[in-house]
Amino acid sequence: MNNIESQKRYDTEVSNLSNLNAKKRLAMLFDNGTFTEIDRFLKNNASQCEVVTAYGEVNGVLVYAYAQSIDVNKGAMGKAQAAKIAHVYELATKTGAPVVAVFDSFGAHVDEGLEALEAYGSLIKAAGNISGVVPQIAVVAGPCIGSAAVLAALSDFVVVTEDAELYITEPAGNNYADVAAQNGTATLKVKDDAEALAKVAELLGYLPSNNLSEPIYAEAIAAAGGNAINSVVDAESFFELSADNGQCIKVGFARVGGAPVGVVATDISVNDGYFCEDGAKKAAKFVRVCDAFSIPVVTLVDSNGIKTDAECAGADVKAVAMLTSAYSEATTAKVTVVTGNAIAGAYISFVSSAGAPDFVFAWANSTLGALEPMTAVQLLYKERLANGEDRKALEAEYKNEKCSPFCAAEKGLITDVIMPEDTNEKIVSALDVLSSKRVSTLSKKHTNIPL
Image (cartoon, rainbow, N blue to C red):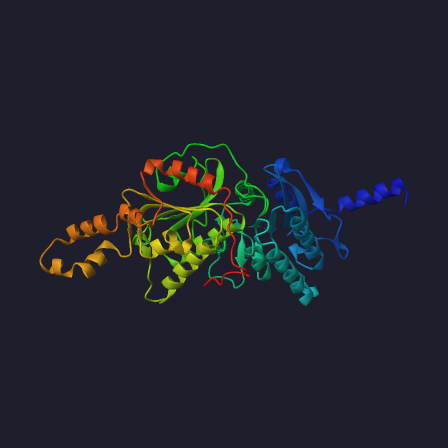
């Protein structure tokens, strides 16, 4: 074939490559809309492949991505599409770069039968193999059902648009995105493709390229103050995740002194001050993601303990066990600040040696106790109550004498008692000390987390 014939063949093949919707989405992700396609001429028999795979830069850092093309064979998964996506996972593993996946497909190629399911299976295995090695972010921008939903959910973070359908068994109603956000399958719910991919780029700004690379620093900005979170992190740096799920605990990324951190903060305004099983699951998963990529975890505690549910006996036990397991297994830097109450299960999960925090600070007006003051007075001061002493006065006495942070510090249970306005400075100093933290763990495959 001479050069003229080669040029004609090339022009013909390029003209047959549309996948416009997928390419448009990838352009939204990569810096300046610029990316390089991978395996762009690979076909599914005589048809072009139903996915676009590429690499480029996001925030100036190498990222791999693939986007399904619902405008080509309805985005159907088959051997050819799986081969293109598998190549992305292979390259990401070799070069240590994040993977972003955009899902929009009505399912598998029916004519391929079990081979189509096997194609999904191979990708699920590939995604599982690189879990914890490079960050994985899924964007569900349309149908993502059955085996595809499993593949998406294996990502560290899942972003769904209002048009997303993410499930194995179809939920009641048609608010699929809301259901996914509320049950914790989705990390973020946004309006459309543009917002989704902008959020992905923002999220990648907090993450290292892989589990061995250095964190991405930014200019330090003084904490703005206000609520507990804003008083300890750089101004306007908190990026909340999974806000619609387990609302008794907030999780998200932020910066402290310009360095990325993961934030876990109980919300005493929810559930009468108790955290629940959903909140515990959310926090446990987030801590494990932070640990996988050596992102320090800053925990802010103000909670009366774990919410008990008479209709689901044992759920509170499992939730506390799961949460403490995630914390104890994590070898990344861990700094805990008690900003209010740390009672019973809240103390065990977030403050005690069970979670192995490196530093524990408590605000001078905080309360740390094995029991709520009301319960403790009922058990410990029965005679005084019977003699007519005021319950509120006894509760105040119990708090001051038994639950003061100074009592905990005297017993060596916490690192220091601090004033709220000194919190940011203390955390910056602690994280600086912990930047060289090294921990050798016992030889084992993994911890058996109570799910």
